[in-house]
Length: 480
Image (cartoon, rainbow, N blue to C red; front, side, top):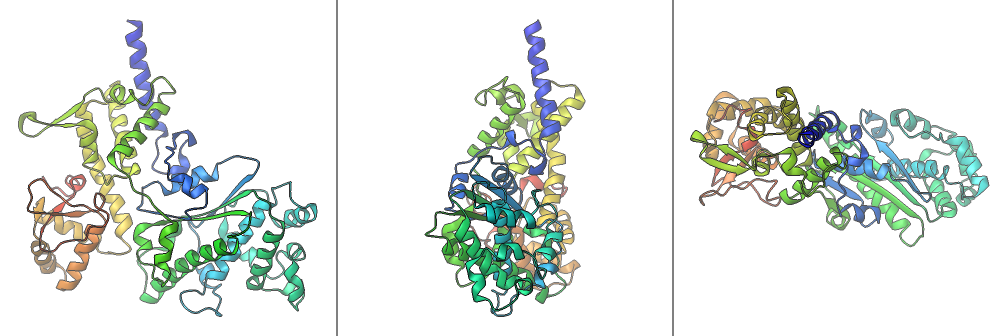
């Protein structure tokens, strides 16, 4: 009797832990919940320096993990552009470069400042340099980058550091009057001259803050030029320190849909440095079992935790419940194979179970959570696609109006065009974007076969095949 009671208490405590500690925002989560994937090794080693993936794929979770590393010879600093006024950077372009390279210098300068800030914490470095660095940089983590950028680029900033650089002799100006662009080369020299073989991670994240409905094409191009310059600046830094023992690790985290807009003659060369975040159902299941085991506080291993939390192997569906599907597969079919989707789905299941007084998540609860998850997925997609399709709510309303799971592209074009002023080419562009963001897929003639972007990353939308709505959006779009 007591053993059974303890088992129920254990399961209830797991549900409470999920409901309270599983968050969509990685910065709010306990670092113990981070599921280490082998691909992170390629970032730590410096082999990869660009982490590209859709929203919700785990970019920020990896950034948090790298930021929280702890070792005597390891330093990390984060350049977060959340709520950052990008006009500050736009105003700092270097006109000696042609488009789209005019922001390379400012990116290098910001990265070098972040490195110098970390070097100030390294007590094994030259004492004269440490004195200079500690006069310039605070020991506190960078929290308000929007306040630091004007300070770092101001006249006279870093004069103490500049005096340590060998290249200062080549500049015929008073140190206090050297421009930030001229300082960049001197800071580079200081780092090369004084840095030891410690690891310096510079995490550049949340760059999508200025990705929105631009007022005009010029504004959109400026943003793209800024990001293109960042990628080239990282390449320049890697090339400069290639033969050095200094382990500088600038790492850029960027959404895949934004990365697709970057255009440069060297873009193909970046591919060997890119970590494209992708997940399979098998890896996602392993990730969930790991998180569940952590939430059980060691009471269950990741090998048997799933059946403790989800006691029903199948979810029954269809007329009179004659059809069945494995519980994990049922959840998976509503997702885009992103960690965030599963975290939200299971967190919602836990909250429903607790409200009902259940000690675990039964199959009826899994089915009930599907409705709320559908609204969540719709909201996520709107946030992600709005900058490309400002009329996304009207477009989704058209899909609801058609009220079919599968229909031809022509049906959508005719229905949408009859309500809103749009030509056929624009309508086709809309369909391509809906496909790219996983709202629709292709329905080939083969029975049971569907092609969605998250399952087939290299797939292109086929206008000669029927289109099908993603299963996870059925309830939010009132499609049954």
